[in-house]
Image (cartoon, rainbow, N blue to C red; front, side, top):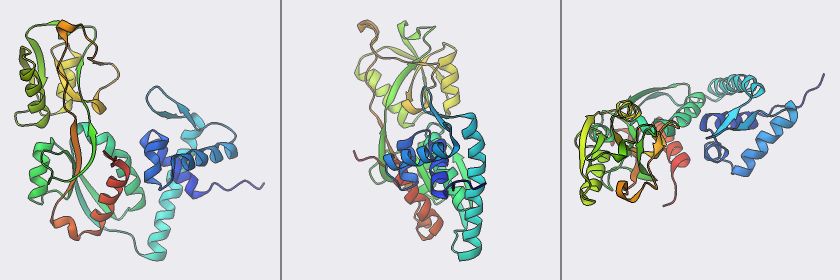
Length: 289
């Protein structure tokens, strides 16, 4: 029986959509417009005869038939990459040392999946730390590239603004307490500086009840009803409440968004592999501000 071709470009688009969770986020990774990405998905669904993606509460979800196709798609893309290696010998090699805070890892994950499937000769080392730790490590060439909250204009190329929001557990209503119990990141972190500055400017009484260098600790403190916290919007799980439109007497001060940037070390300027990674991060994440 003759079957229609499953074109490799359609499969690459499908994998990118699954990895990023949306058509719009996948578009820059495959160098297509959003409408072209949508058309690729439709062509695959027409051939298969059923939906491969469905609309979820926060992002697109893969159907049972889509999961089956996804496994074959990844294998075919890997095989294509191996063929390019063998035939053209132009694949990248080397090591890229990447840094990212916990809450921004979700932005980097689909880019890394796309990169590693295309450039299998490149090794990736990933370090998850706060931006205040990553920036000095980029400057000292311990890391090659990092996604960070930028504290100075010279610290990387700005990509987008990430809002900071107040978060609490709805069943505890900790925000009603005075002084306000808060969880904060370690001293010197940009999130902590912004949190305390906003509270002080608003003359809001507060008490620091929890300190942690990682996102997991912040979430634990909030989920347990111990405190409220100021977190990046991208890191807020669905079970927690973004504290907005509270009664006037409990209103919390507005927070300044984080300036997210990609920062590259001087030593990595000679690395072709880092060149490609840097370009893919900028292409996928940069928003005109």
